[in-house]
Length: 124
Image (cartoon, one colour):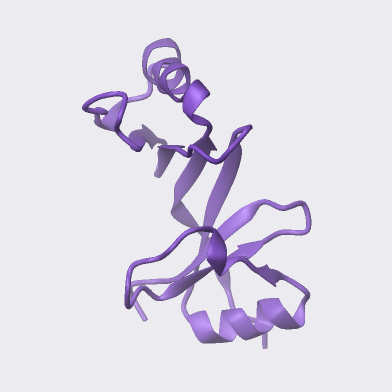
């Protein structure tokens, strides 16, 4: 039996340093999204916006040359999901960003190289 996956509440936009300020200003000032936490300065590494029922994170990433979108998937069985995804050819990408110690989740890549955080739901 395959595990059930649902969209998580987070969408991350990983943005190169040279595009960060203009990207944050675009979503805040042009599109008019409501900031959850206003960036304190240009040294801030993330801005967050209300995005319907989701949270749009805009993360400043010095090592990128172009923006990337990362998505969150939620499952009730993280270990089962890991086995299922591996059995179906998904590539684990845990090296791309450290997760907090004890966090129930992992990173995978879709066939088109979209990064997904697979995390266990709180109601397990």
